[in-house]
Length: 249
Figure (cartoon, rainbow, N blue to C red):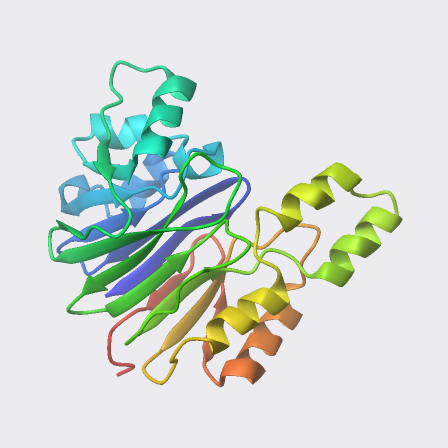
């Protein structure tokens, strides 16, 4: 299994878990032509897509996925907001419920609630025989849960408090945006504490996603999380492909 990162920022988010035979799309925030390229235009192997919440950088291109006959799953709250926001006759996403597992091909998915300024945002626990148990948590300032038997992790590491405060002090960031960031996104130390609260013994990859353009430091974030966890840590970048097998070999 490979993780293909098509976008991981406020400009657009989309990730593919892909083994060449079947693929799961996580988020629909990237132009669909880029998704097509990532699967060599074999769109039929994308068995489904899951969307965390309704903000455009995560859900803007839901319609294109549905038009391509790819089932798209999201919470009821997200569905209502997406339909209202994008007003398209082609929008017919499928509803998922927190705590209720469902299957897309050989992927088993468990949605869970997260903390973000959206209608009903989700994180996802994803299982596939090839990649094992994958945690996906983006756009949340905190996780209420811990998870067992994880093999791969994608987790938001959006900003660091000292960088954010320095940007506000320098007049580079409005105070209102600082307040929203703190109540919507995961800070570096929170990310580190969240990871350490889980059993990481079986984890092969930690991928830090959705870094802020101006309030983060990618190299310091990677080094800090790597030192804290002792695991292989990646900073998500568009065009990156990572071996995401259950076994590191």
